[in-house]
Length: 61
Image (tube, rainbow, N blue to C red):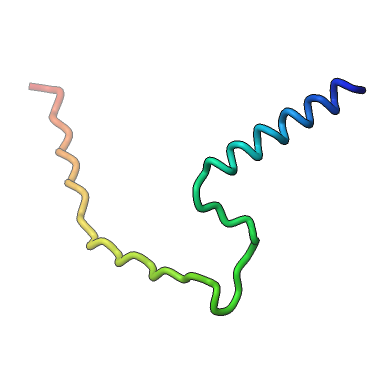
């Protein structure tokens, strides 16, 4: 049983260390209202046609 507690403490310590080194991590949850940052959808890339498949060569010559 004590091994579970020690494992949990080590895992929690590692998680806190990683989160503290991660920079600007927002753990406050879902944003609504003025705090929400909405980004515009990227412009759709122009549709390019795929190259047509080459006609199958005749095996009989």
